[in-house]
Length: 202
Image: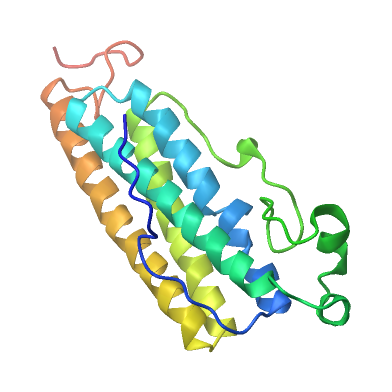
């Protein structure tokens, strides 16, 4: 059960529409390393987490990714609202417009729709957490790429905030992995799984 505070985690106030930039940023809505996939990944993985504190980290970060999804959608919305048909045509936004008008729809910058096959919920906590750490770095890299392309501070400031949160999430997943490794090492599981490996120390 969550309490929803009806404000963005970081303010988004973009005054100049720009459909070209919206097409870049939308990748962090529904692209391969975007916020939708991140949220679904962590909120799915938490059910198989063997330790309560690790499940809590997955829940906390998965929930925060929903807030980031809301921020990215707001950025794209503000960049595309009130566009003239001429601006839509000249910006290369016409193909998106035909299918979605200026509604927010999950896709990558290249136009590929969101696909749940882009993330994994394996049920093995080491596998899942290593994937999560990699996912946060891939998202950070995507935000780095966006910041290399965009110089409008109204857009850059919320993007910088989102980028910083990816770094924090990477660190928290590292902490979760250390918790898991410490506990599994106590059982000799991390180095040697008695269920599969011969001659494991008892």
